[in-house]
Amino acid sequence: MNLKIFANTSDLLYDRHNYKLFQNNGKSIVFDNWEDAKSYWFEKSSLGTLGYFEVMDKKEKRKGFK
Picture 1 (cartoon, rainbow, N blue to C red):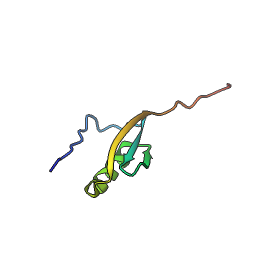
Picture 2 (cartoon, one colour):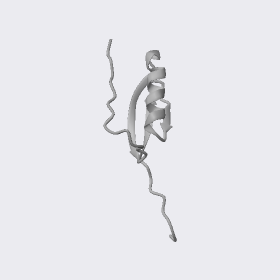
Picture 3 (cartoon, helix red, strand yellow):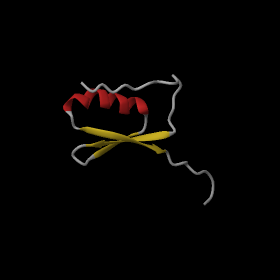
């Protein structure tokens, strides 16, 4: 069995990234927080349909005039 382990380095909220999960069927799902991404992975990993995550920086929300 190939066990994959995720480590936590901080218990503080961390929301500077989006997490794109690529599935083996070519589709992908984007999560806006790590907790949801990690929960989905552990819930679905036994199906053998998951590929890998791409960690993406969130785009900054600009304030003011363009």
